[in-house]
Length: 121
Image (cartoon, rainbow, N blue to C red; front, top):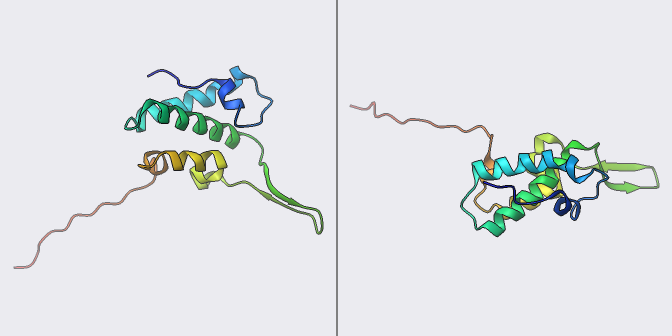
């Protein structure tokens, strides 16, 4: 499937000095995941998911960004950690909201299964 968003689109939702061509790797990665994992939504929603997922990947590649700051007693809280997956950035959180089936949120998570056998006579 074709890439749905541009670097210009991504720059509308995330503040970055990267050029549109430098953002392409994040878009390509997001597009691959959207194509591979979710196809159940209308084209317009897939485009939005790809946009926010691209911004999430870009944000995760940057130095930790302050989420909150304080002056008295100096305090800084940074946005999430990579182990938080989509919840690590506000962009990823938006992806989670758009992907109501949870395909991207569940991708790569370990799964468990079990088999029940009847051993009673």
